[in-house]
Length: 241
Image (tube, rainbow, N blue to C red; front, side):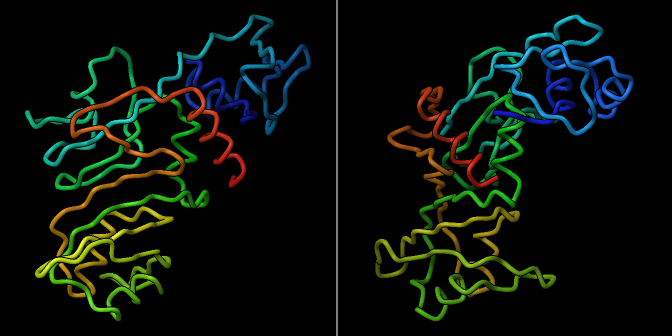
């Protein structure tokens, strides 16, 4: 996949994007033997990119890890205190970071990766990839409450949500399990939507992000993505970019 040249250089360790833009402007960078200019794109897996006629460093091996975040674990790689983080659950060397954060009390699918391009595509709202949740709320919702979720609603400070897909999966005497699909990721969005419509979230589990599903992973378990999952995810994001 072609991406901007300064991103490739930055990922390969040649400094900030601004510094990499300076290298390009100084005509020190070439793609397949042709001097590069600002704004050009390249495919690092297909094209030969050089600086001062020397091939650039190979970027670090890309890592893609699907994790079932348990309740009570922070969606960060480090913390000043001793609370567990998603990074502490994955016993692998290297640098990788969470995509699609969940709050402390929420559970479910989180992707950990060192792929900066894919991270941007999964987190930027313009790509509108789906995120699916199972949400237990109290009391059982009325139809007009769910209608507000489907239409889009104002949260505190006048923040407007996009329309969500929501349905009742299972109803109990004092609570209900909802299926919810969002195409955005405002901070604590489902909990805030519930509060604004007079509901309380008892449990929240993310079960899908784009084409990635939680499957049968138990809380705290993780696995590397299969190659076909990576290809499908990149193709999906590329189509929506």
